Image: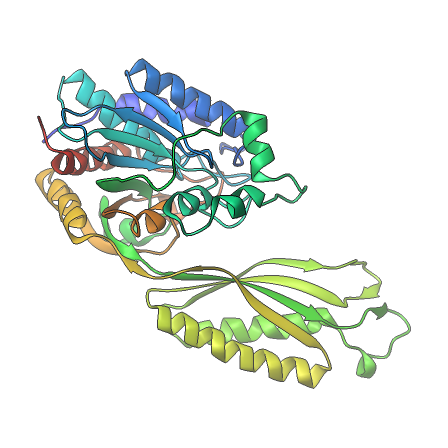
Length: 406
């Protein structure tokens, strides 16, 4: 079994982390920002130095190709370089740079593959600047049209199309082209591997995700002159809605519920909140459980708002169905982990990843490594250098098994 150069991989991770470095040890490279463009440029510099051919598609997904002995669909390895506003140094980045390290190792050992290998950096995986998350892979795989993707805007009203132009990241590679397989290495972003003292998670699939938008419509009024019994207070109604969401999640094993954003229209400290907008994130390994929870919440929300004399609306902003990964690709990851004598376990991904969209396009699998305390989307996100190396070793050997050694 081949082994990567762990020290070289770690040096690459630390060099990338300097682009958009934050005061508390994290990274900030929002999608298609100047920092993201600088991170992409550094990756391209490294890829070109390894003799790779770099192209971009029309939504800005970046691909670095190592030719194979046979002219056929590539085996693709990758993830993303964009981060949360104050994100960590490893979320997404590990998958791109471990793929680069795999190629460096093959070049160093002068090993050719039958199928070409490609490294993918997907546009706007995080969804922190443009929604939804995994936008680039969604457009690539046809889950969203190019027109829809380019029209998405950030909080300042800047579109994806304008940002691609401003950062020179748009290309002409066609979307949806054939791929033999896709492998993605990622930090777990949860505590399971660490709690079980395992180094590798063999990801067998992803859980169902629903992003919902909720609008509560009450009536604004003066905080000092409006009696409590006649108020139609949107904030207190929203608080009750949030309480029943938490209660419903607590009653269903495996159901996860998160209220991530609350916006008060024309909010003021001495004004009764009239109209509010909330986001709700629901997740479970089974689609029917999530959908049943949404149906039940609609009924509960109706009761709350009717009793309080308010109105509400709840719509699905984004839907990601549960899906299994390809059995053969998963087996190749298992075989690589076993051959490298890793402590490993099968697991379901709790977070969304580009691999979810790719799994509907080509055979796909993922590899997880632990992160300290399960912490991610945070400046304190941390991994062990040895775990990064082992993850890269599994990635390399699984990809080599798929691509074929010439």
